[in-house]
Image (tube, rainbow over all chains, first blue to last red; front, top):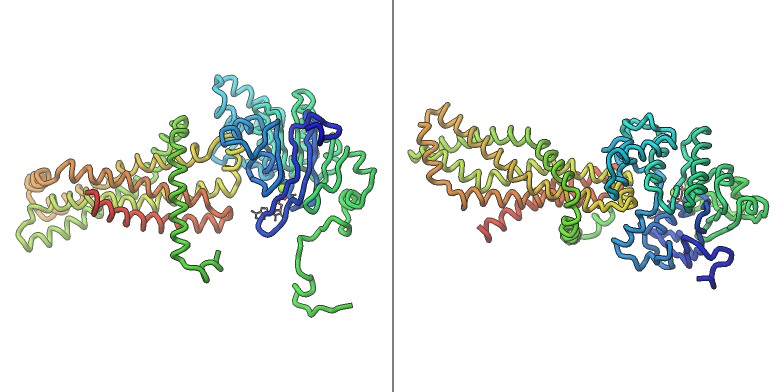
Length: 276
Length: 256
Ligand SMILES: Nc1ncnc2c1ncn2[C@@H]1O[C@H](COP(=O)(O)OP(=O)(O)OP(=O)(O)O)[C@@H](O)[C@H]1O
Ligand SMILES: [Mg+2]
């Protein structure tokens, strides 16, 4: 273990030589990545590079074509279903599309993981759930149904659900999407506070550079199936490689493709190809 | 999908589906012990699928009974044996019509909504969310609905039969003037609890399993789009109806 890692001998997630192909598209082509324990690590990258796919690999929802994924000392490829479920009990996961259970109220959604895995007295369940809802500013919405929530409210409920069992690893897939500036600020603070007070490890996938630099200790920039850059937020913004300059500068031209691979534009529109 | 339809054999597709359904059945059976801790959920589903189908079962049962009474009275009067209207109605219902028609109605009413419900859970990542909360959707979502089908269907078939016999009694006795005592005594004399009534109960339990298995399978494996859910719902009705009738024949021919 120590032979591979350089600065962090104590990483919670270790990925080596990850290769994945979905359909005909190669998503990962040799990704090596470490998530240090007790820190907030951000994963950034253009839309469609496979950030969500990476999170699905880390949580064992999707098996890669090749490569090794070790979470908290467990090689995922060697875990059976029960062991995987035991591991997941210690992971909080915020889905990109919230994925609230539509049959249950906000309260019951947040209470769901508690009720499933811990036989707690009702009063305690109630207190824990209300505390978590208070943390995301939605205690008053406890009795609403998911259909009655706005997109941003649903994300905060999903966040409350992800943290309700005080997991050791918290995975946020785009936690800032659809939040107004006030809620965004609160969520940024919440991620930091959870990280500092409970000593959790967090993985944040997000696009908002300002929020990411406030929240994260390290950033991995994924592009074109590989890790394009890695470092602290300051390092990445300052140490300008072509990748980071383009990505953080938001320019269309550069090594990071803005367009999904496509045929020639003129040919697609039905014009004869004009060769210069 | 459409390309496959055009070039490939539909038979091949169909066989692949049957194979996948068989594997799914094994997974469901394996999940049943784990689903026992969600017993309350199973009970809720029994009420739910039962209550959902009740109105249609009662209405259809009544009208089938009325029609059977009319037709049989007319046919049997040619042989001067109208006295056995009750007997024929009861035997036809208990052995065949009750379980089969209830299953077809159940597929259309409860089966479709089970598929749509689970299909939407798939499309909106709710099943994935359960997996991530270390809750097995096979045990929490699928198995309770499967068990509910097995329990609810015989009850629904009984209600269907009762209403149908009531309907035929209405026509034969109250309307056409058959003697009330004759109607009942002939029926109770000729119908055997074990060979006739229990036959129907076993059948309907099996049909309940078939319909809910197909419905949960289609929902669970749907393409996660609104079109995918729409197709899956249609397939639930088509496949579970065909499968019900095929299995009905096999059970009647070889087991009963
Ligand atoms: N089931 C699938 N079959 C084929 N390709 C897929 C499938 N699921 C995802 N992809 C492709 O995988 C790529 C990565 O998807 P993913 O959802 O991981 O992107 P992402 O980095 O999370 O993007 P975003 O920032 O928009 O959320 C996309 O290009 C997508 O087209
Ligand atoms: Mg994504």
